[in-house]
Image 1 (cartoon, one colour):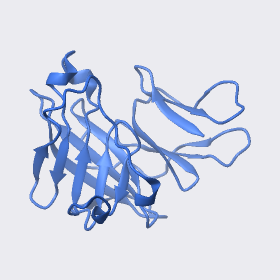
Image 2 (tube, rainbow, N blue to C red):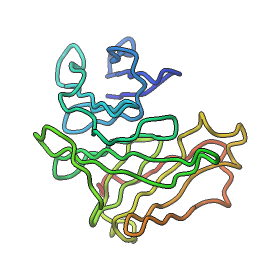
Image 3 (cartoon, helix red, strand yellow):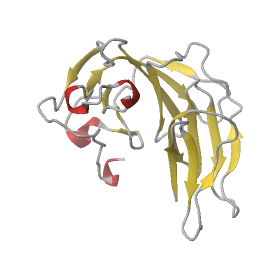
Length: 207
């Protein structure tokens, strides 16, 4: 199965083998920031922080819509924020809110929220503890730092705020590692001039 965010309006589409066409999952004029498969369901988050849930086990295609859980009351909304979803090994969902500087469109801060299994509201987190999270254009993941020989409590990010970037992407790419212990970050691959944003590649054995 596959699910994608597409078009200028950033709507959802779903596909499974033998279907003749993609199925539109959008129920109103949402602009989605991220979508993932997790626990035999599809979860998506729109720019306002509202969570959506779709069951993938039905024969007619995914069934669902707006999740009963409301967006975090203090979650930032705007042109210079992006939201990501991450499925965790303990069954929880994480929502990361990525903040960009207005002038240079560079990442400078993250807010993290957790929705525990069967919980009715998001809770704010200050730490990822022993885990790291990798976010970007492809599905975001949570892995243990020993898998890639680094420390925990970090966020690895690639660039996907293209609508605010110059046409010359190679000169304005935003790729780096954010350390939640002290709020610092370091740019990586700055000497590599990508023509389009890279995505993370990893073995399923790391997850």
